[in-house]
Each structure stands twice: as structure tokens, then as C-alpha cells.
Image 1 (cartoon, rainbow, N blue to C red):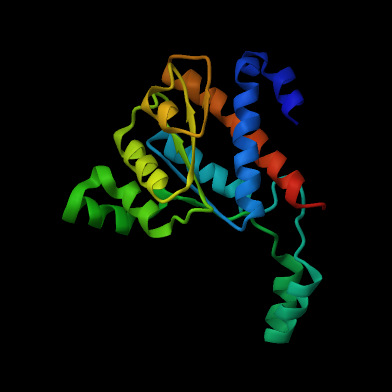
Image 2: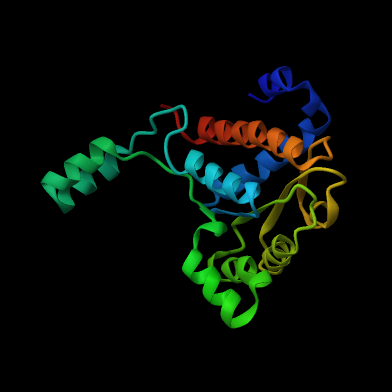
Length: 208
């Protein structure tokens, strides 16, 4: 999948190793029963939600539930459980921190809006988890505070950036710095990268 990505987007060849490094961190996270926390602003916030959508349900595979889970659902409620067993899909746990308006607005009003993402990492994050910061400049301050919180909790930090990678690239365990400088061009390259990562993870953890 990574080789196919390079064929379709040759401009990403310089960051191939960084994408592979990010994948390995995510693979280990999910092998250990962890989850992914994602934060960004504007278009990068939308990308955060997009990534969650690809990880938490079937992307290109059906991801049927295990037979054990199907039996447990039917035992819990024969009618509803049977429908759940038939229709639900496997998910790789991921949370977009941009999607909690009540919490974020309350924290912004009561404390400091720049620290809202960090507060969520503090509440949700565990050492086995991964934080993915998306920032075209690598210098979004609220994303950086969240990255620092993640580091303090023993989490791995990934960065998806552009330009020179900014401060995020310096703190990240793996930073994917796409070779563009204009915001919209950076964002155009972020999408195929995170699609490839989601496809690679789905292929690793789901057979169907």
C-alpha cells in the first residue's frame, strides 16, 4: 500500500520512511490495546474527524464481529443482539479531540481555550495510546500543548505537518513533513497519507 502511494504521489517519496515509522507506532498501539487521539485546527480538525471515520468502521473491508461477540450479543438480547451481530463492524479506537464542543467551550470559558486539547489528552490518554497532532505549520499552540501532555503521560506522539515541521516535528516520535509550504497544498497531501495509514492498519488487524 505504501509503494502504491508512492506511485500515485511521487512527491511523497522523501517522507516514505516517516510514514512507515508512523505506521509502526500505530500498529504497536493497537496491538497493545491502545487508542489514537487526534487534534488539529480548521481543515486539520476536519481531517481528524475523517481519520476517525476510517478507523472506527469498515474502510475497504467489512470487518465482521468475532463469533464470540456475536454470541454474546444474542445472549444479551436475542432480537436486538441478532441485528447488532449482523450489522456492526470492528473498530480501531480513535477519538478526534475537536468533536467535543461542550467540553472545549466550557474549558475555554472557565480556564484557557489554548489548553482544551491538552485537557482532553489528560483525561483520555494512557501510556499505551498515541497522540496525532495535525498542523500545516507544525506550530499550532493548542496542538503543541496537547503533544506535551501526551509526552508527560508516556504516550507516543505523531506529527502530520508541512513546511519545516515546526515545533511539532521536534517533539514527535515520528513526524511526516510533506514537501509543500502553502497550507492548502500541505492539506492536499495529508489526505492520501492518512488514507494509506488507515488502509495499512485495516489490512493488519482485519482479514475480511
